[in-house]
Image 1 (cartoon, rainbow, N blue to C red):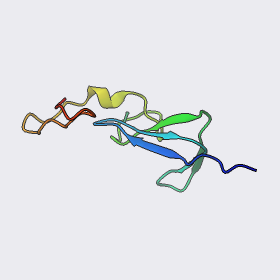
Image 2: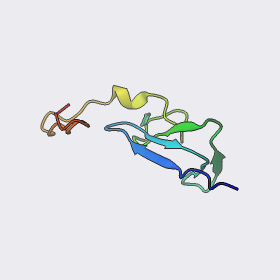
Image 3: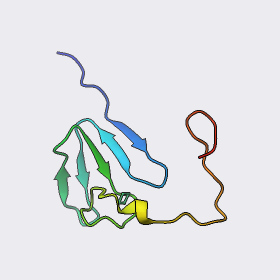
Length: 78
Ligand code: FES
């Protein structure tokens, strides 16, 4: 019997947390939500109408003007 691959978590800049693998998300009120897809996006901005899942509402948020740009994967700023 092989060991299942580890659950992967990827944090998206100003966006959701992507979970890949077998996960059960426990909401703030204790409700357990089983992911129905291999990769799911969990809202981190608090604006999703489909919480705990991301519905893209984070894209409507604007970055504060004084915020420094984040470095991209290749080290360049975004
Ligand atoms: S992170 Fe996408 S709606 Fe909140």
